[in-house]
Image 1: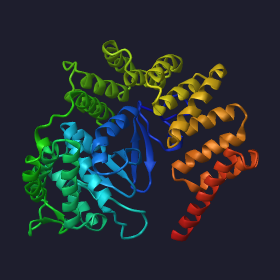
Image 2: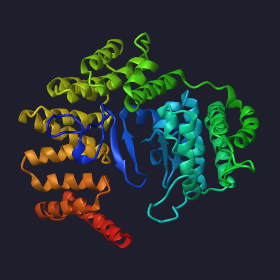
Image 3: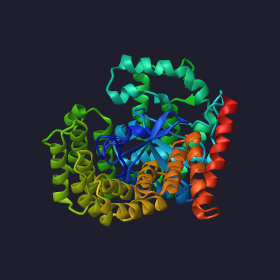
Image 4: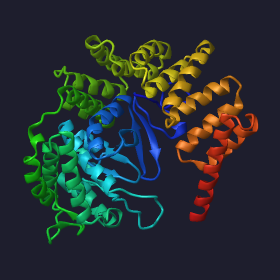
Length: 462
């Protein structure tokens, strides 16, 4: 996984100056349009690509054009919001019992993409909002936080009015997405049991929290999960794929990702209760490693990471985990050796490469800066949407005295962070120092034009 947040006092700590929150290999990036953060993680993104590919192909879409993105939000929710992007919130992954349930959710959301079910918010302030398969529970952070029924009900009651305008989708659209999900599950040979199981749990929550309206519908525009289950169950059970089992290797990968996410987003004490020391499974050790690090016990976190590496010494994500713990514990030289192994084991993971580049810079050894530049250039070449990597590359250019390209890297970062004013200032600065009409100068010009337009639009809307 990639990323971290940097403090000016300790290399590898949290990058508060960037407005990013990164712990271990998760990278969190602000997402102003939805007031949520995108969590980027190499292992998680690889899993999402592999588990969604059959569904995407069954939907007649190109896998390279569809993204499944993780948002840091404890609500049990998923939605689409324009383009070919499915957003899954952390609460959904934490609540899911198995990968098949998540695949069912993705199948439904792909139905909204192919059906063009996107609306604009009533006030026009945000570009678009999405429709949620789990709209019954949108905003129910108390669920993931372990609150009682009264607390959950209070949260949901406060948001129901907003949902009316924010998720005003017709029952027809929901039914259409459900039927599309059936087709995509059938076409990919994936069982619909997970989708129904997830709907069943939502129905129980719905009844428990008394969310159903008097006429049997939810907020007059969303069918109850009970209605949806009744419509789907007979069709899905007749599908030849109904009894198909998830590939055990893929399921094991999901359980790893789910555990590490729990270790990252939940209170450490809750993690230790859910995954006690007596549980020596890989997911349990993975979750505890994250939790111990978040609880400021690096030695115990490293012990868990080392135990994982004893079982799988060449696992790039376990190596990444150990390297991140060392880096954020103020031991960048040790982290470099471990992260170099991780990059060697997974050369196609730019998020890990960006983390490796950060570790090289954090050693404060000029002898490492040339390698850091090469590593970071490769990382942004393979994935130019990581502001953390651009920030690190900007540091290298600054250390080398290349102020123009440091400004360009900074412009790239601010452009990704949706800060057009700062992106424009830095892009114009870059153009002043880079030879005209070269690729870097043209890129700076592009950022300047886009940022200037965004600034003008913001002024008109203020």
